[in-house]
Length: 257
Image (cartoon, rainbow, N blue to C red; front, side, top):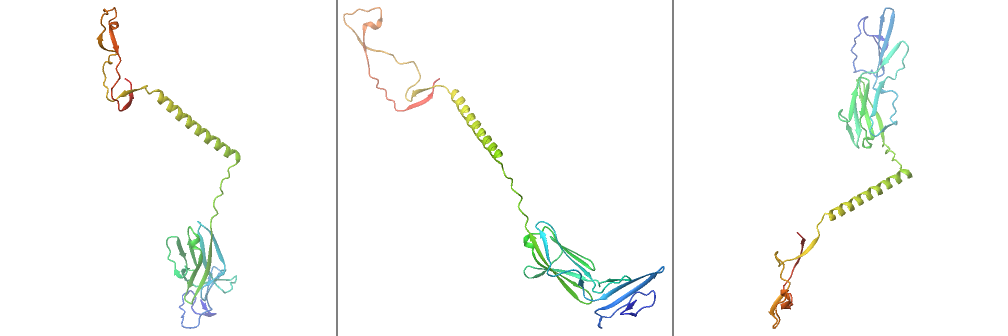
């Protein structure tokens, strides 16, 4: 193991404590190993987190109802060679949202944060226009920290296309509706007619009369002198016609028995 080109350990010893008191930013810690004649070299640059390939002015687009994915991947500013692999220092990540003030995002609900030593991802599930805005991810290691800015926009779903009725379909609906109305009207007329046919004829009954035999048709006052009894008893009497003085004040309609 070498530090800035100077060996720091003996062979087969791959552990070294590096003090942060001195000026170590930009220094390289390299470890080389041989196995069966094959040599591998790994270099770690002591520098603040560096998000490779990220632009703070980039706009991330998402569609309403989908999941918006914001991701930070750390790399190294050092140029890799074919004989060695360069890896960044392990880092921790914290996500923030500006709404409008800066608020830390805790993983849970629709906001899901997943992080490793070099990668952190924020998933916003079932995104809505209210989730649009500015987000920030801060990565921190032993040397320093770096923030990555995300600008999220949410596109509203277009409403589903409405079905357009053609002329034939509209005419069919109108004809069908008219036919149903005519059938209902005919059914009502038939029902009323049958109900009226079942009713009995009506007669007028006076309130102050009672059932019983009909009153006599004729009233006789006296016999006529000098005339003998004829074959018909009624021919020997003088027929008197009396005015009907009965008082009727209410006419009640009822069914005749």
